[in-house]
Picture 1: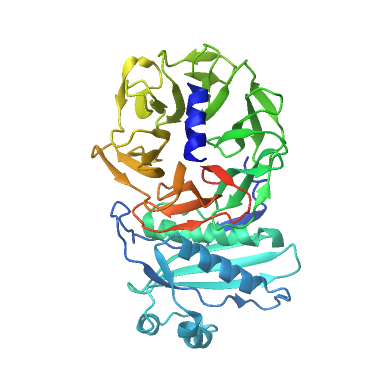
Picture 2: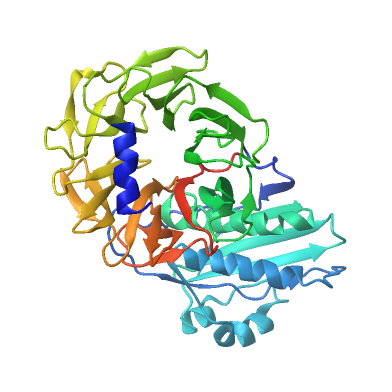
Length: 449
């Protein structure tokens, strides 16, 4: 959203992916090799992902093994903590060792490899794809973990995502986010529609057919549903669909705004903004359709965001008396009646707070000079730092479920796209490349097993 449109926006306010279709099981192994993600900089782990070795009887005419290896290696690269070793460096030794069933740690170490993934696979038609992964710590000369996956051909990509997340868990203690998705809005016809895309930028899907203006999608904590505001029925109503865009249900249809929904961590309530009081106020909507008012102020209150423990809500408001919106925190039970805490001070315009999964940080949009940037407030250190800088507007941050990445919208030169950036990193990567404008990203929770 442009600076002009953002100002207008504030003035106006003045699924579960169709079940697991493959089976996964451990081979064996354990690991106490962990890195400290609290450090801003990390050395990349040199990891080797040799060509997948077909088991006897495998019929891989379509190149499933080659495709799977490329997907897995790319996932690891996108985590920004692994540096895949080039195939030209490891191919000769990988081929020589393929049939031995052993690991020559010294030889792999001599090739500059720190971690090694060995993969066997079998393809017997489109309905029977088996992958057996084994992860080794070459530096410490030990086996870390093994996994076996079996499923149909369309689920090969997800199998690779799942093991990439397992490798990340072995390194950091937290699963990776390769098997998560980002939902976002994009212009379509005369309005907007919602799309979903995988962490690696593949599997782009259009999931709604509203044919109208849409605002502010938000995933449910279990990943089964998404709520958003839709103008389809000529009023900004609160609507819910499943993660495939089906089972559409209107949750709230009060006159005026029913907007900026934010699901509580337990999935029992939705914080949202209503204008039925002739002003923008924050309410709670429970599963029985009961409403509870949280803010009572003559200024604008909007953009609620829950703390992960469900006890606090961050929000944007121009109640500071400066005529510009700032970020505040209030109690989720008593609202602003028990007082609020202001956490933004370095910008004249702030909006879109997003609480990190660990509860220690809040990302938000801030006007810096003439452009919007993403800032992060550290609640433990009581300090604010810049996530983004440079040209173009960056806004609407959304955290990955592991708290290591932030997705946000980038607008520059009349075009906008969704980008992903590691917290503490300096570079972002574009997630979407559609010629239509993309905005309002919301990151899914971890996929349910």
